[in-house]
Length: 259
Ligand SMILES: [Zn+2]
Image (cartoon, rainbow, N blue to C red; front, top):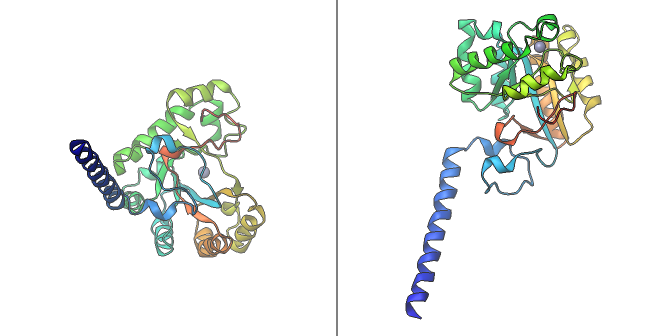
């Protein structure tokens, strides 16, 4: 009887030590991930791969296309000031510019996600000539070379519809283990060079769901109103999230659940 009791006590001590170790390793290894976790989400005690799916509660993903650019650093400054992380979709021709690569590394170092946005950004090449997968592979490989990260998510230039209508093209994407994200809100910012307040209005009037993914670009007019956009979502009670490959959910106009 005494030995059984002792065994039980040892079991308890080991379990407590294990929990303590697990808790400490999480806190020290991923201090930044906690910031973007939606409120009300259960404590993350399961393996990350099993916890996939959409986040709970009001969550917004800010996304910026077409970088890196001469403004990337200033975008990162605003994000950092607000303790927010964002998702960038960068373009191969810009990633090749050596003077911009430090900011790509900085984006990753500060907890942002950097995904691919093709090499050429040309509709004809990507969709008519079916160069989508080769171009995305090349772009993702460039990001890997620059940052050491190994991203799988891309944003299709002009969106997945109608470009990825052809199922064979989508089969190729699945085979290459590439994931595709469109958006839920189009800010139309690239087209509003001298009308930045309209960018804010576009976003405000389209914000309706608990989960929103906002399409923006690395443009000066966007940078100008970014603090206002962040304030809007804060006031509306949204948490800011950054794309996480271990918690992927599909978000594409083609409604292809494999992507
Ligand atoms: Zn683009």
